[in-house]
Length: 419
Image 1 (cartoon, rainbow, N blue to C red):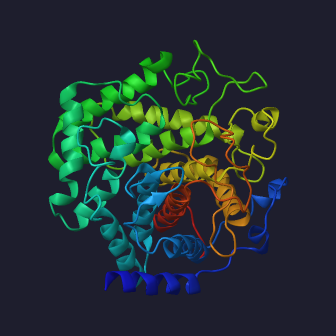
Image 2 (cartoon, rainbow, N blue to C red; image 1 turned 45 degrees about the horizontal axis):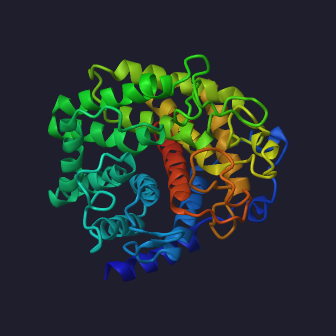
């Protein structure tokens, strides 16, 4: 019954969605004019319909959320890429005014979580894992538990987090993506269990990533983050072919999103909250001067010609996933009062207008998504409006997070979105 309802609602959502502007349907190159990203505030109804369109396209492609993901190998459907999609889906559900659609999103997420091949499991089902990618699914498990508190929904992810805490391993988050994948899970359990041990362990893991791993993956001078020790000063020290430090857009996007998701739930009197706020603001400020005229950011933040210099022309931008994560962070920061609306509002509007005009195709396909990797220019396929990444799910999740938070921003009166 739930499967039939999901299929019917997917069709309904697609029929309700407003078609993006004609330029987005066949964009083959990024616009060069600032006017493309700096137009008026989008209408809330248009934001919602675009979110429905992009999500309906994905759900239609994956009507059964329990099946494995087949690519270079076979992956269970609860790996990090799909987990990020469900973060976005739950964000959309929270702002969805249509009860039937909201129920379909819940049904779809529950079917995924309770999948017979990995029922409410972390990653590959091993609770001893310390891999943050395997813990990412816990964010949605916790969302679903909050709606219907069945203990089975969070039992294994909590067991896995407790094992990591008890091991006293503080070096498990050796790459910055891990901050988004696992840090919000720690924060949520700290709140749920009213136990500061989760906050303490989270801070130790975060501090190692920030200050110790590779000499510290946070660059105090710029406010940006190196993806892992291969890019931070030391040996080896990877730079772009133009001799410029490599700050990966999506990696920095994960960090900005993690701050938003952690600070959203972290108590106001939590011991290290002020440090996270300071780092969030530093990263947001560092991103402002790096934004492209079309509202996007390049996949290599500090070098707009990185990929071309590496012999991979066409891959330098625009890039959707990092850009969408920055939009999510900016919108959340304005809504929470941590970022100034006058400073960050116009860049946020430019982001959304750029995404909807350039990345969203008329059928709901999301273009300009860099495939999975560990750096700009992964070399698997050039970025373009129509190129299909190796995993489509996480890009959609990032986009849904951005648009959903933009709608929340309007609802809270921080930015006035026309109806």
